Image (cartoon, rainbow, N blue to C red; front, side, top):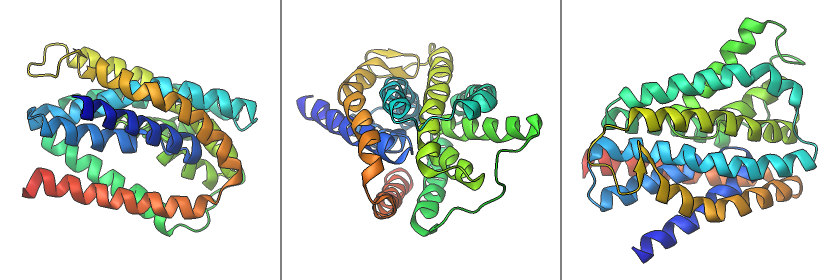
Length: 269
């Protein structure tokens, strides 16, 4: 148990730092680590990915607050964009979490692996952002559609949304620091309603780990959050003075290895 707690504390350090630094959401680290640990503890493969995704959203509720505070101080947060996209983000998150709750554990692993692979490919090979327009669309329907999709795909795999919202915002000519800072707010708007849905849908589920509230494991959330809330703010402050391109490539390789490990563990071994 001591080793497991130590691993979760390290996971918090890494996920918080990456969330603040790159705006990709610490969930992309939290989910696979939690998944592998719960498998090693011999919990059913039908529920481990659900617990991992739900608990990741629970952690992001805390991590994002620390990241938001740091980015607001750095004046990286565009509140106009937040106002335009907030409702769609929340709606998409609720629908994504509800969908994930109804999906089998095997299919949820596949969805996570596919989306993580696409995220890693974007990080690895995209040198400059593709520019679609000089600003966000004027159409409320288009903004609603974009933000809802970001919320949906983020919550279904338990991430804070930066992996989708940062590249999307840069396509509309937003500077990278502004995109990262604004995405920190989206992280909370995705995580909080998403976690609530996972709690409700998992209340009657059997075989969950101890200290679970629905699919959200309170113990995992608290242990990871202890360290992640500190490193998220630190990562945000460091982000202005570091070579992000190199870091994105290193993180992309890590994601690819994670995807391979998930597939091997779940479908081959």
